[in-house]
Image (cartoon, rainbow, N blue to C red; front, side):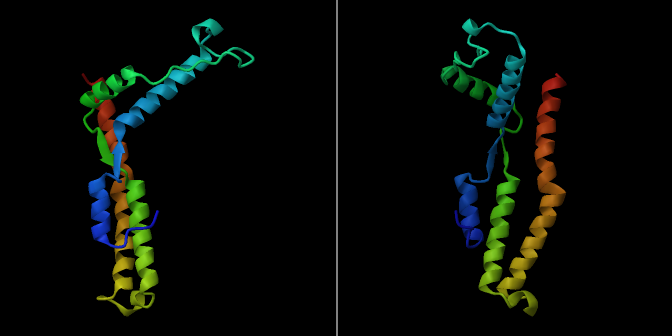
Length: 152
């Protein structure tokens, strides 16, 4: 996967959904992890689909329409079903700026109006934005979802 060449490519990637984070899928994954942990600690007989001591009778339920129904029902209840994947965005913009600085290595020291200087500034601003906003925003989205669930 190559870094974007410029902001037009980045805009196309936004439109294609590269930086969309599916919060519903993350919630379903979190729930299945919790169910698996509870299933591993509970005492079930091997006939009920749990794992035998020697690991011989492992059965897994195939994906069915119930999971699709769970997804759509959960998506209806969530405030933020989609969020921005800040980690991917930061990685792409940083790679784009690094590539621009390689194309114009002297520009960073020559000042404004040069590609290398602009790329350096954009990268610094992106990293600052990520520290102050991006990393915290995902936590805010998760907290607002939790608050909405339990305040009703």
